[in-house]
Length: 372
Image (cartoon, rainbow, N blue to C red):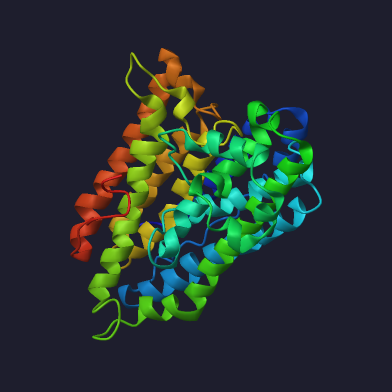
């Protein structure tokens, strides 16, 4: 039987590692942005299921302790971001960058939950158009700050019909951290665009939260012939798919894209590299996914222990990278450490696929990333 105390100590050490990594990230940023990051270094300890969680209660636990709090936090921090942006719109404003950090963190911690309200009306892409493989964001932003009439930016309904390349956290990151974009147009137009994007983020995240609370929460725990899910097995299949999709994003995209090939690394493809958040996203993603994995393993303490150990190993290696933007992919010595992290996460993914999947009687299945 796994020792609950040892698991608790492991999680506490993991939170400490994430805080240290955040402080390290701050040290790589210019003074004003470092101040903004320092104000947001605290990362909430995720809810983790008790060792005694029974399989019969796992769906309720996942909904009430993992999904709903995550989307509540996302909507709250996004509303705060929009409120701050209304009066603090210059790129290096500490209050704006702090609010951006809070809201972006909240998105990353629910970004693996790509089903239901998140997928309605392409909301996930409206919040997070990444990877931008055709480099559409900068060109779309340049046109917006030089050509788009101000009334189109000031009207939320009109702005919501714009290209996803103009919306969400990655477009906002360009405006706050990319010098080339900051030189386009004039300050008033750029401020209007910051306000438009943050208002749109707030509206989108509020819609996701409301759909979860008003309808989809009941759907997720009430399978039946007239429901989207016919059985609890189908619901577990959906949740297991979100977990495996999260691993796919980590291995193939957050790590695989910048790694490229040994003789052709792609550091400029690292996610959120302009704001030096690439390493942080990996750690936030891992930290957020573990409670879901543990809850799905409820009733099998030995498997829960193995899953916990796998996440601990990956998070320890991720926190030790000392590479906020993953620029080390182009340095053979530092690249080895990033490849080792990718292997740790692959090992964890294999554990989830070969041990947890059969336990639940499910497979990974098709996900929204397939075919992209």
